[in-house]
Length: 87
Image 1 (cartoon, rainbow, N blue to C red):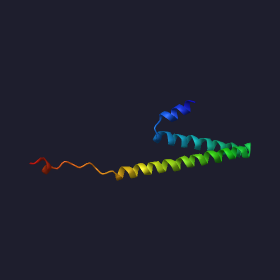
Image 2: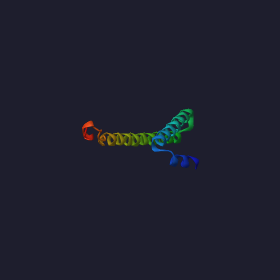
Image 3: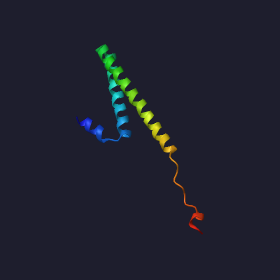
Image 4: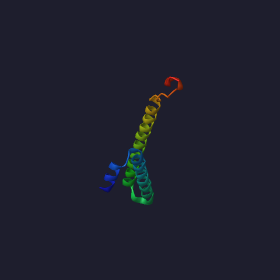
């Protein structure tokens, strides 16, 4: 419940890398427990967390690229020239 509140309050450029980091940590720990002998269930969880982290990274990359494209598409404000003042 506390994580839900934090994820709603944080901006997306902090929230998304945090979610990716948590998923990768859980995936690595699940892979570790798979190797230690917990069975195929832990392997399934590790693949699930890894797939979710990859999907969130794909979404984050697209969002960053669209923001960068929107930033470069907006024209710069006109600069004031000395001839416009009537001097």
